[in-house]
Each structure stands twice: as structure tokens, then as C-alpha cells.
Length: 125
Image (cartoon, rainbow, N blue to C red; front, side, top):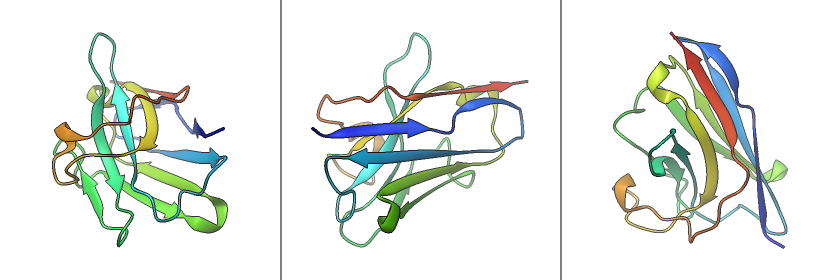
């Protein structure tokens, strides 16, 4: 059974950092386009960042460019999201997923309808 397990969220002050992890069981993340969505209260899922299956090229939403960095460790079958200079607007539940869509357009990304349990990120002002 395919399963993503997100971890690393927490409460941090504005300007702080967190590193999220996305581990997979039942399949390998290598050679797959994997990314992160987030969902703030009362809002729909928003594409944040993804890493391409072809050449590990990375893509980011404009709202996180320059602050977030996505990476993968194939040996650990894990994708990471390093988040720096966090702001209260980054507060959301963060989910990882296999991404489909036009990679340069985060508003086009879909997860195929599958969501893990997510990890809560709360940034206080």
C-alpha cells in the first residue's frame, strides 16, 4: 500500500526555520516527481514546491521562493523541505504527494486525490 508519512512540523517564531520530511513506504520516491502542498484553515490546498523525476530540477511557488528548499535523499527514500525565514502566512498543514501537472505552474499541480496525514506548521508573530 502506497503511503506518505510527513513529519517535522511544529511551532516556530516568525523568522525561524523548520525542516519537513516526507518518507514513503510501499514504493520508491526516486525517479518520481514529489512535492509539497499546504492547506491553511478555510483554504484549499496550495502547491508549494516539487522536485522533478527527470533531473531533480526544483520548482517553487512565488510565495516561498528564496526561503524554501526541496531536496531528496534516495538512500533514505525521503524528500525534505527546508523552510527558512518563516512568516505567519506559512502557517498550514503541509502534505507531500506525487505531483502531476505543469511543474512551472504550482497552481496546476494535483496530487491524484491522495493525501497523507500531513504535518502542522504554526508560525507565531
